[in-house]
Image 1 (cartoon, rainbow, N blue to C red):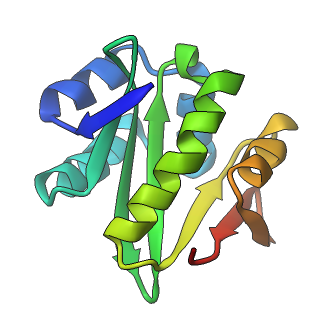
Image 2: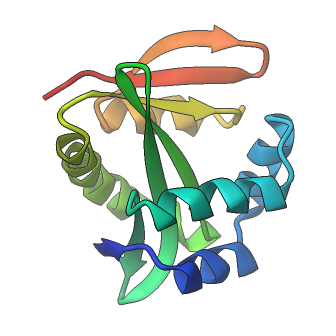
Length: 143
């Protein structure tokens, strides 16, 4: 796995073959795909997005923005992204993003009811911060 600064072409490539689990999360959050793409596009234009690469091909996007004393992440991926090997890469990469944000806490929202999601966030170093109607906010403390 590797990463690079995300481009508009990467955004198109990811959303052309978006994992159904991602589309389901966006719908559960009350967002349509165009709204999600617009949010990513804004972050990419501000240089706050990375494309995650597997064998040199884009498989996921992660973007972030600072909101009140934390950085919030947004995520989109192909189904091929979801494996044990990508979790190890992401554990290191999320700390890199945190450093780019001045070592702020990272907040990540999940609208998934898949049981492995809590485990994956835990492996990445996140803890559950709060639960709401249909979502969980995970938090990564500063390094």
